[in-house]
Amino acid sequence: MDTRQFTITDLKRILLEGAGADEAVDLDGDILDLAFDELGYESLALLETTGRIEREYGISLDDDTLLDGATPRSIIAAVNSRLSVAADAA
Image (cartoon, rainbow, N blue to C red):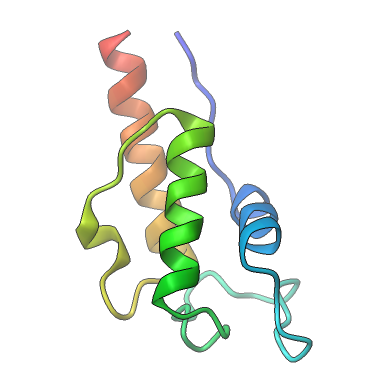
């Protein structure tokens, strides 16, 4: 059974690989509960990020995952929930 967990480090890596970061964005701070728009990531960047997560981790995320006000914490929780379901189904 795969017990892989998706972490803030994984999310930061995928954000930087897919959408980059504005020089004013500090992903090294406490960003878990900041909305992505506060971090400088618009909906198109989040769609790219979600697509990368889905491909890399072999899961499918609900469209609701990207609702306005989504935070790194909410994305991490959604990914880990899907990974748990996938592991249970394996």
